[in-house]
Image 1 (cartoon, rainbow, N blue to C red):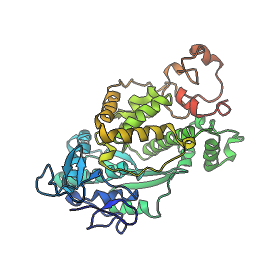
Image 2: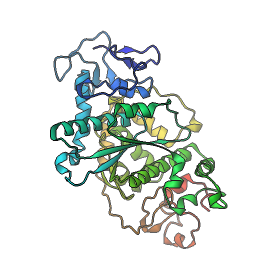
Image 3: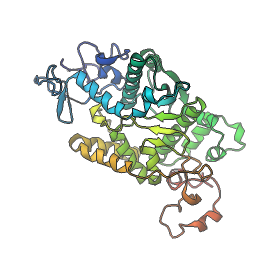
Image 4: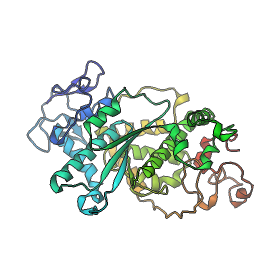
Length: 404
């Protein structure tokens, strides 16, 4: 089966199913077409396609014609599908039916952004649940899906979430605006970050979010705070709906990006919780089923150029790793493996926490001097600290006039 260039978006498509005509289909098992699953990101194509003039056989099945090259291995569509499924399912061993109690259905929340990775994970989970049900008559877990509407992000086409629900009807779906974070949490510290909020109850959640974002002075700060609030909203929604954990669609590449960007932003202390499977200090388990899959194995996206003024630390890390993984994928994997070896400390319920990211702060050492290596660094600073309690990383994002 040969791939061709779509005349509308320039992305690769398959002759049988044009991805602009049928962007969402209830893909099942061996009939899966990842190009359609990824069509929400127009102008993308899975992996690296074999040149049109080539007719190299699939390295694994030896029968079909290869359409993708994955880690130097030419694969047909079916073998590529099995490759991704196998990588993800290996990370979900504890989700097997034999590990599920008969009188209790475990439920997890999938954070769906409609990016290539989270959409792929949506399909993988659906496939896994269908397989479990077909073999045993029941499933080892249930899944809810949440999409957070982030201000300034690319607006989805009307009906996209409904189409996803139609394609994968076994999940519960919810769409939340980011400003709902001020409704879902009773944390007074979060509202204290909003500048000029007098009286507090007179402002709507939307106005609070707009005011907070408008007070941030750099693109990195805005992106960081929005990302942090998005995570907190997803966590609060998971707790409110009875989920015991969250399934994140982060690929190996994304986790490597996060490792360096969070370190650069002063939040390296939280890496064991932000990049590894297991308990998080937010009261839920975090799971990363696609942590062994490179982003380039799912999609080669056409990146729009951006001015240096609007480039964030996250953008720099994303561009760096997307370039590195093309020729040196082992570097990306090694970053994630190394981070995975970090010890995850236990966190007492009474531990001091950051008002923004809600991560525990060692010895309550809040503020810019908490980790800055400054001469004022130390417990002496704690006695004179006023205003919101922020970890070192969040202090760098929230301007001084906001933090009191």
